[in-house]
Image (cartoon, rainbow, N blue to C red; front, side, top):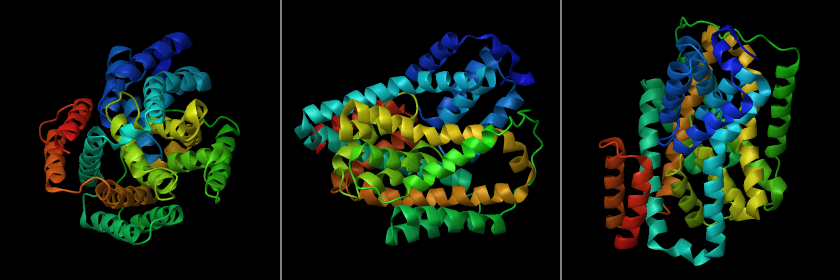
Length: 394
């Protein structure tokens, strides 16, 4: 599907598109916000596949949808240029490097299981504390700018600290959306239309597939096996609002709280993915490989990204409706505030309780957080430093 604002992207071949996104997947360090900046430089400024106004709408839509926003932006750019094939090529190029690296990291864990007890793993776990705390700080300033939404975030956190399960997390976000639609009414924004027409029944089909798979993922599957792994990943990918860091509590519930995976292994993988380029959702490749080897890595990666693709293909045609209706945007603002509370609860359990056990550990967390928040040290470099510090100090 090519819109008037993406004509120049229409001439690129699928192979050329794959090479562009593969290069971005190899070099895009820094998390979702940085990825969106890299995409703007590449596709708006340099290649002029989209105008500034069209790109801003793509970003706005993907920020409203559940899932990894930067991956959805890339997928949407591919779709607007070369249809569904372009979307698949864009996603594959951007995701492949980090997914392969995380799968190999997991397989090294399986070959050397005693390595998880080393000080470098303890250092990575403390790095995760700093990363999640910084994510909450940044998201809180953006998504909870007033007392109403900040109170909503704290209420969600309190509930989840008392009663934490997949169903309670879903229910908390639903209630947050309902409350948000009452307490907050964002004003209309004057932005141009992307001009994406409704393409027959395809959006309805994609939406139906998403809803059906989500219901299946919420059923009580027996732990272990590819079906259980797919359900865990699909549910996480479908319910994550606010960026890649928010996947942590959903996956923790399925893998750690259920006893399927030790917290040390889980947090070591989550710390390692911070040092990778590309999307944070490739943490799924690590978890899948730990559970079921290379096949599990492929299944987990596809399952966690599938909901975001289905939602993009469903949401593009209805973007105009959401943009024009204040109540719909207000409900989404409430959900986003609830997401901050969800992540705040996860900061305590499992992140804090499994990582910070001494004054030395707390001191290292403070230094790492300062490196992220104050000194703007690259995330990948801090991940390496934290692992080394853990080997020396813990």
